[in-house]
Image (cartoon, rainbow, N blue to C red; front, top):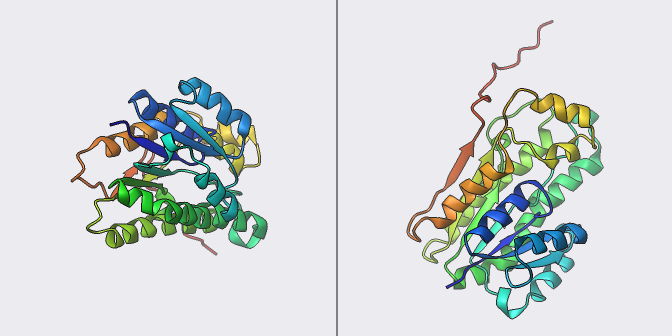
Length: 250
């Protein structure tokens, strides 16, 4: 029986790599994002409309999310795995210097969008005894200067995942929180407003995680026997570990 995965935020980075990994293993994939041209190119790369179905909408828009899910053709209507990948960070400034619009964008995408998508697909996932994978971050556990609201949104994702595990007891639905550390993707260009110099400086010499590393971890979770649940995976590149606590001195 062919399974179907719904992958949000599939137009770049983790989402693109996840879609490719699952399609490679014979899954059908529903790929979402805001850029139609990228979705169309991804569908073609994955093997066409028999393998992949694009849904172009902004996950912050509940009405658009509902309409997109209701539009799924019969061959993609049953969902075996939801990979809540869509998310973003904006800015690296301390809280007192941040823009409220940036904070709202992170909350609306990383929290509200993820929660709405989860609720709107839960009945289908329960019917298929499926899997939910939520993309959190090490920022959920380890604060750092400039992390403020971004870290708070990922702490929500982590706790929401645990709450789902509790509520879905007995349904057969599995839930996993994936918590990456330093990862190289378009995510950082978005966070820095397209600052390529900052992007290059962050990753220089660090051998960071790549989108394919996260895709491999998620596929491993999905491929485990149905009675096995991985609650969370915290994953870092070998080059990254914990820093000393910061101390301000007068």
